[in-house]
Length: 265
Image (cartoon, rainbow, N blue to C red):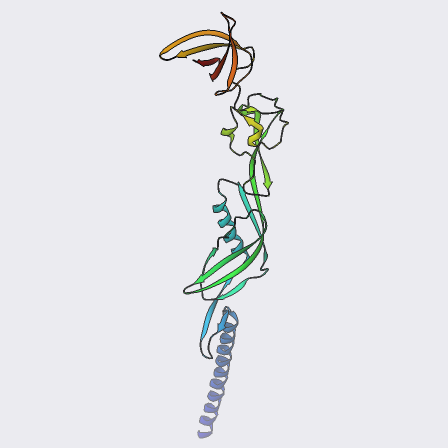
């Protein structure tokens, strides 16, 4: 009987020990798996027992910061801005978990092309400046004639169109506002698709040579009106010569509107 009990106890010890080994192995595997799956945290040593997080300023973030800065600086002057960061080529590591970035304005105004920017990175009370080299491209919506325009020909809405083009300076000479072109006239022959400049257009002629016009003669409070023929063309505000139809006398008159000139004594 005693021998039978000993055998039973021995079998129980073997079974319990095997289960303990299985359970121990399982827990070890779970711990190892958890450690492998734990995300890596980039840190920077401060002291032997203290660690502090770091923040990375990526090339993409520098690109966005510089582009937004230029868009604010050049608004109303260009249509689009494109920035390609050349240096630094990789992310810049900084201490801390977050930071504010802004471009330090240059003392001199610079335009598109290869430029250097100074980007201030502020993290709490600490500040670091990153030197950035970038290629900057600026585009405008230039106004061009849609057909050939003769000198002095009035410009209407269907005579022009806009074309996206690259400029090499922000203070470019090209016209981008249609309202400043429509209603004007060509200062010289203008071929199609040539970007317009302010010197290429001028106010339209109010009267042309040989036009029949109303001559208004003013002297003190007295006003007399008669008709005449223009001897030259002119715009509003210009002085031209007109001939009185009744007397044939030539007078110097100021153009005040279409088919209307004024003579003062």
